[in-house]
Image 1 (spheres, rainbow, N blue to C red):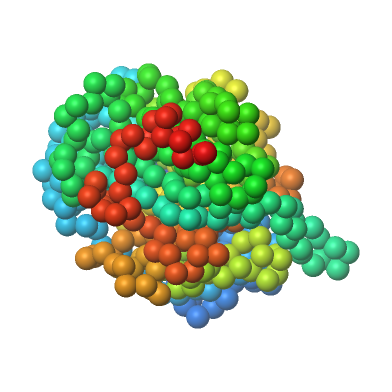
Image 2 (image 1 turned 180 degrees about the vertical axis):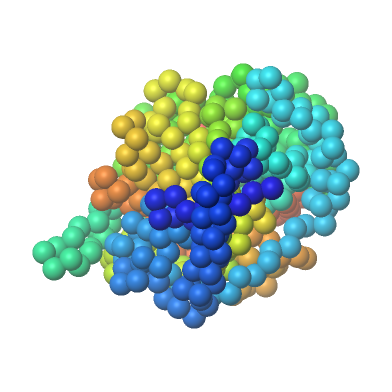
Amino acid sequence: MSFVRTQNGRCWRFSMRESRQVLLGSLVAALLAAAVCRSAVAQEVKPGMTISRQNVELIDDLVSPGVRWAVENGMDMEIVPYKKIPEPAEYTAATEKYASQVTIGERGELLNWVAGRPFPVVDPNDPQAAMKLMYDFERTHYFSDDLNVHLPDADTGSLDVDSKGNRRYNVERHFIADWSRRLRFQGRLRHDPIPAFENNADGTFTKAGFYPLIEPFDLKGVGTISYRYIDPSKQDDTWLYTPVIRRVRRMSSAQRSDALFGQDIDLDSFGGYAGQIPWFEWKLIGEKPMLGSLHGENLPPKVCEKDGGMTYCENWEVRPHVYVIEGKPKLPNYAYSKRVIFLDKETYFILYSDLYDQNGELWKVVIQNIRTSKRPNPKIEFEYPEERMFVYAFTVIDMQLMHGTRAAIPGMQFPNEPGWFIDIGFDNEHSVNEEWFTIAGLIGGGR
């Protein structure tokens, strides 16, 4: 059980463990504040509204500090009605079948998980609540077997503000990648082998690859592959290939937090968080209604005018239940002192995340824009039998350097591409086998 109180002018939902420490008078005040918070959400931010820097105070309790910064600097929000997003039937069935046997081990490892959501019910008073929610995110229904993204592109550049307060986004580099792929070895629901690879001597959980880069010219052929293991004590294996010097470089787990090639996102920030769950100490801060961009309509995404095009001005809706989770890294030399993640309770999808520097100051924000549809691209006939979630745009902003990277999937130059091929197995024309995820495949793809 939980209740909402205001703290420093903001609305939060806390566990009863904390509430027992509150005096009766404070509890009454908190319960009254709960009604005020819910009323404010219902009355002040409504479908049909546009949120901009002129009325940004309306969303103080509905977005992260990083997202608020983006709105203050020109990212307008079009408010649309909330829509429920259904869960795939196979995933629901797997959750019902296997969830009761899942636990977390002494090293933070997930034990006895087969498929589906590991922890469909999480008690906020549980000391492991935050870690369980992060595992629910990682073992998502977003994909179960494989994920293949074709021809994403990105721009990176600086944000300048003139004497009149006008913003200008100065694009420094343009990136196009051929493929970004992930292959899962556990939790598979749609294509054989189900539910897991039998021949998995290395204990692999996923293999991922991002290659080759097509643009810019000086980085043509560059790419990465990465292996994530079931045993959290076994560090990721990540390799970076640079064809101009014919070198494959192995990256440490801490280096996964470093942004590469002059842009702003690091490997661990894709999708909101892409690192190992046990690498962090996780803490559940609370739960409350927040804004999220889950029903976008523009493809290509609509670049914002007021910030010169650094971000995307898309649909946002009030999501009724969003977990706020803080993570502090255990790894030495990790770039960030903490991540604050905003996880939608209905979909277990990260809406956005704020990243903090070693002095505890807000450094970056990762914002995701999602479409929910049977078709990844409404302009073409390719579609899935049920609605899926597609990240068609995301933005990473370095607020300290006034620098940002925006990405679109499919890329802005490829408006007639599907972009997304999810759970297609090994027999689809866009499928690859395990050889694609090897160093030999990485080098061959970069030639």
